[in-house]
Image (cartoon, rainbow, N blue to C red; front, side, top):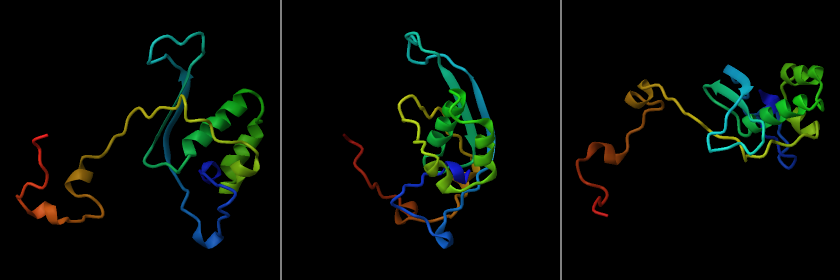
Length: 140
């Protein structure tokens, strides 16, 4: 997914300090959608759903821009496959595309494994974890 990572020109990355960019997508789906906020006002809505354990900064906005560019015929299928086969944060930036605007992109759900709350990693105690003292005034 490195090709879809945020890569500002002013922050040239060095090989030795690159952020790990491997992400395992559990599901990526594209389908017709319906407005969740009333009428669509004549617009066609597309629902793009992505399920993963984690994401890179701006990854979804870059992926959506890539899908839109391909849908409009401005990005050939071969180039899209090249992005996936040649993961590098510079690829999206050098292609001249910009991230999709945040308007219209909605986070619908976040799911956590219950075990993360029982035994969080890394497990860290705070002083307030071991006291029965009331640490805030709940009378407001």
